[in-house]
Each structure stands twice: as structure tokens, then as C-alpha cells.
Image (cartoon, rainbow, N blue to C red; front, side, top):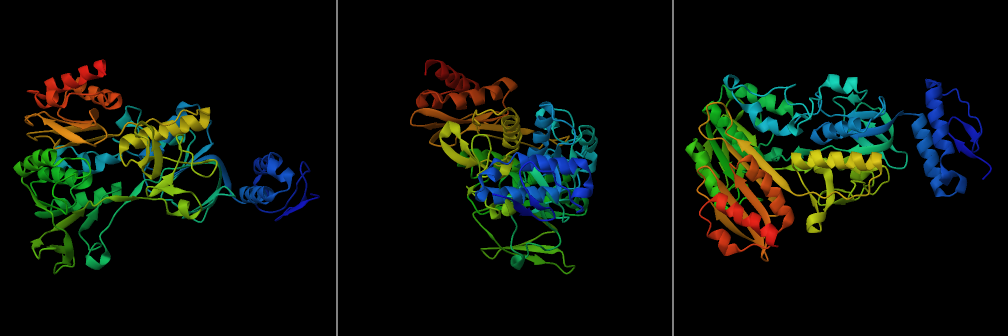
Length: 501
């Protein structure tokens, strides 16, 4: 091929000098050097095939946009831990940019439905106290930390579109950024009730970001009745926090018990009783027909599917979340499980593009299936694994063991603090042990093998045993477990099974 036309450059050939008076090239020698470097290193150009046109598109895009070696899209937990991993791997200053939707640096998001909602006299959590990565035992990554490490953070910015061939993303500010490697860590957005049934009325709250929690906290001191819609993580944690405010709280769930994706009916019953002891009421097996506005335009009542109408001063909705993947799937990335499909190193279907945390559908090696895990533990671990694989070239696949936990009723003065952990897979039949005073355990057994373990109020040593049991998947005597007189005895039987299996 004798030559190829590039906008603003005329005819160019491999290795020839390039001069242009365009604004993209007047940015200094650094931009020009990056342009030349990408051009000369493009083997597909020399072959003269379709790849040449794509490569030249990428070169032109790089010349007309800001360029970073690494870009992380998203400013949540996964993004914060990815930044931590970059720094720990000796990242040079100026090579990483984070595009963050919120005005604040990455933080430990679970706090928003726990200590952040405590009353003012109960020592509520506030930033900068829970910035990433204090939840994982690392140093607090404040905005000053990112500046000190030479990491550029674009706050209040999101990605509106991307071009996989040109390796660029366009942001909400209209700016175009070129990347060599891109990590998608956009997390999930709260699922909302339709506007047609009052889902956007004033006084209806969703919690996903600090601003959401702030909006809720500022109104709680003036409220007497609250309806919480949803019995999952958000609903249960918010309801527990509201008990510290002494607010009349009712939780509405369409299922027959709380936390239906994980809890058995037996586990749920124990927690529902504890919540009821703390003044929380439950309406189960029923759905919301409409949220109604009161005389002041604020939400004032909740109409249920059976015709019941509940007066309320405020509604908190926790009915799940959806991965934020729109611009990336539209650009051509493969999807699976409602998320972005990745391999064991979190590489997407496009070379140089990765996805971690809530938006990644990854191979769950231990159970030989693909899954998406929406939990802070996976956000932290997937971020670390991805960056290590990217920078070190490791081919070791991600070997994640599903882990879920919650801590509630931790406000000062609470009579009973709750802390449960679950490891493994909740499949098969169950054996439940303990009187919930305070301990309680459930074991999932499938085809004679121990698949999952749940424990409430365990000791540090007992909690540390759970992942070992779940990963070992030992053959266990169900009758021996069922005959255990205590949680401690049941855990001992399970532990001994790992030796004999």
C-alpha cells in the first residue's frame, strides 16, 4: 500500500515524519510522540487489511483526544480497590485516570445503609471516615491520596458512549478520552418503581450513593411513619437502622419471607422475630399497587395489592439493582447474566477492555458455571485479581468462593448486635442448628457433600472456619449434623469431615 489518508495529516507511510498544524498536534511533542508510537507499532497497518483502517481510526482518535494508558470507568468500591492494586504494583504517576459519577472519591458503599443512617446522637458514619480501602484493611484513599499517587479523578462524570475500534470513551462533559487499557467498574443502579404508580414522588427514597443517604437522613428526624418496600439487603439494613430513630417502620415484601435469595424460611423466621421485637412490622406475600401523594404533594400513603392503604410520612425502596452496562454493551461487548461477559482474568470480548465488580459475569470456577455477584467482597477481590492479571500477565483464573454477610442493629445502645456470614452455595437440603441466643447455623448438603454454611454471631475462629468448609465441600453425615446439640458441636463435626473426606 503506497499511502493512506488520515484526517489533518495528508498522505502518510510507515516510519515517515508527520507534521500537522491541527489543534490536536499543537498540544506538544508528547501528543505527537504518542501518535507516532501507535502508528509505527501497528502491525495490521503493514498488512494492508481491514485492521489497518481500524488501527488508523484509533490513531486519529488518539490524536484528537486526551490519552491515558489506563482508565477506570466508575467510582465505587471496585474502582477504589483497582486503584489500590495499581499503586501496589508500582504504577507510575500520570498513567491512570478514574471517571467517577459521584462528587466524592470511592468509598465503602455498604456503610450507606448501616452506620450512615444512625441518628446524630449515635455517632453516624461520615466521609472521609469510610473511604476505600478501610473496609478491606488498607489505608484511607481520600481525594488527597489519589492526587498524591498521581491518579487523575474526573468527578461528577460518566461515560455516555465508547468506540472499541478507536479505543475511546466519550464522557458526559463531552470530552473524549483514549485508552490503552480500560476497566469497567460502573457498578449498579437502584431499580425503581414506575413513575406511573408514584415511584418518583417527593418523599420516596432510593439508596445507592452518598447523596441518596444524605437526602434520607436530613428528613428522618421529622418523620413518624416509614414504609420500606423490599426485604433484601437494602430493606433489612435500612429497617434495622430506623429502629435507632424510634420510627414506626413497616416492611413490605412480595415473597413469603425476607432475604429469599439466600435465607431459608427457618433462617428468615429468626430474623423477622428479632426485627419485630425491635418494633418493625412485616407485611409478606403482598405487592405495592400505588404510592399516593398527600395534601402537601409528598408521598402520604401506600396502596397494596389487597386494597390495604398504609399511611406514611416517607418510603424507602430497596427492590434490587441493575448493572450499569448500557454504553458498553451498545458498543459491542458481549453480555451474559444481565452483565458484561468476562473470562477468568476479567477480560471482556474486546482486547484491552476489562470489567469488574457488579457488572462482570465471570466463570465461577468452583461450581463450573458463570455468575454475577453483587457484593462488596467480590468488588474488592475482582478488582485486585484483574489489575494483577493485567499488569503481571498472570493466566491464573479467578477462583472466587461466594461470600455474603450483613451487620445490623449496631447503633450504640442496641440490645442485640447481629452479624451473620455465609460461604459457598445454597443448594440441596439444609440442617439448621442453634437457638439464636445468640448463635445459629445452617448447613447446605447436596448429594452428601457440604456445599454452603451460614453462621450468626460466631467467634472469629468459627467465622474463619466457614470458607474452609465451603471450599473443601467434604462428605458429611447429615444425621450426625442434625443430632448436634449446639452450633459448636455441629461445626466440629463438619470440620472433622474435611479430614476424613
